[in-house]
Image 1 (tube, one colour):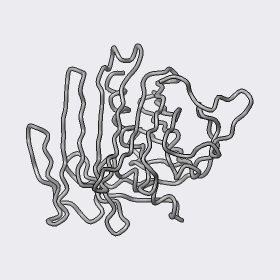
Image 2 (tube, rainbow, N blue to C red; image 1 turned 180 degrees about the vertical axis):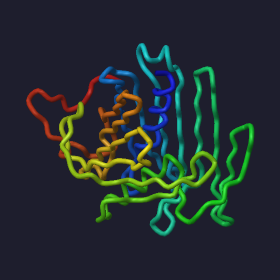
Image 3 (cartoon, helix red, strand yellow; image 1 turned 30 degrees about the horizontal axis):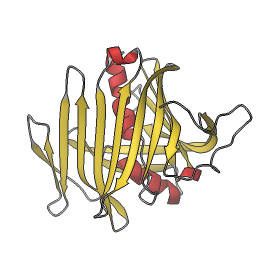
Image 4 (cartoon, rainbow, N blue to C red; image 1 turned 60 degrees about the horizontal axis):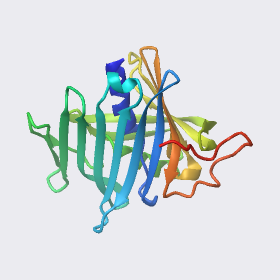
Length: 254
């Protein structure tokens, strides 16, 4: 359970983000393990005085699960637009609070097409390609691409695990889903993996919120993890959600 929860916290840290033309905001997600409240995820998007955008994801276990996995996982991506394409400048991964702390930083040098990676033990250099993204910021590109994309698949090249990987995102259709903020129409997506890979990841992104993910589901080894949006600031969402008489417009808990 400890390993699976760690994987999911990392996964949602990489599967959820915001588009470049969306104003600065913060979003909170409730994380459940097989339907039981297990943790929380918070995302923030901020712009500094130079126009550099800071996208941060912080996730941690809550309640009884915090005894099994007390780690706090924080990812940060600094990026800007270059010719209307998301271009990462710096990426940091931090895991603290548990027995095995970890820190990794990646600096992108677009002049010589390299990324300098430092994990405090074995620094190395990775050759990158045009439009290479980091594991967090690629979701920003996904949201921007969904606004204009007409096909059923989007592909990205990601600097991940010391090498370049190909992420394939497939568009499955549309669904209306329930959140603590009300019901909302969303586009259903999945990250395609090899046939022998038993992991399954699904995203629901809301067009009315510039394709902000409002729900994520990850299934692995018979265990289902979900993250559902429960609070949003900095975005006009009042018209995006469908409210019923017994539906609260916002979760009252932090």
